[in-house]
Every structure is written in C-alpha cells, then in structure tokens.
Image (cartoon, rainbow, N blue to C red; front, top):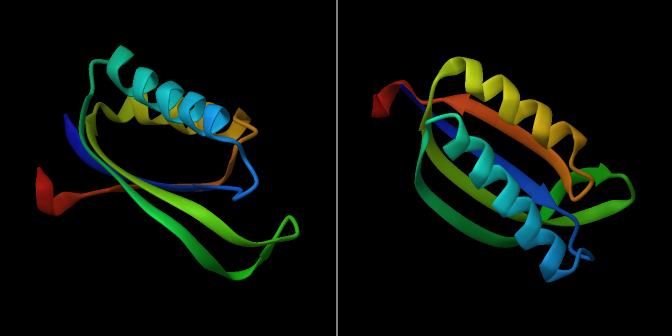
Length: 97
C-alpha cells in the first residue's frame, strides 16, 4: 500500500450532520478498499485564495491514509459526486512509504 494525503474543504454554511456524513463516507471508502486511515486533522475555517462558487472561506480537513492506487481512483470518484465537498486534492506521499 502507498501513503496518500487528501485535503478537501466544505462550505462554511454546511451543517454539522452533512459534514459528518461526508467524513464518514470518505472513511468507509478508504477502509472498504482495505486501506488504513492514519490521521485526520481539521484545520478549521480558512480564507480562500480566490472565490469559488461564491465562497470566500472554507472549512479544511486533512486526511493521511494508506491505500492501493486502484482504490484512490474510487475515492476520487466519491469525492467528485459528494455535494458537500467543494474541492479536494489527493497527493501520493513518497516520504511516508
């Protein structure tokens, strides 16, 4: 398994239940693919560099995990169809193999 890092943000207007549901969906997608969740950090509300969908701020969450490369594609698909997640980025971490 390879080490990955996922950074995503949700709109500040999203309620806690929808944020928790999105986080749970991400966690189950990783674990169903035989991956492991290493660390989840909530960075809190940050100002965006530029306006996205009429938003100037977002609540950021950083997820460190290990997974097979094929399962990362499924995670990317899940994040794209999730309405709560505004933007996301998955990066392979070569320093944490």
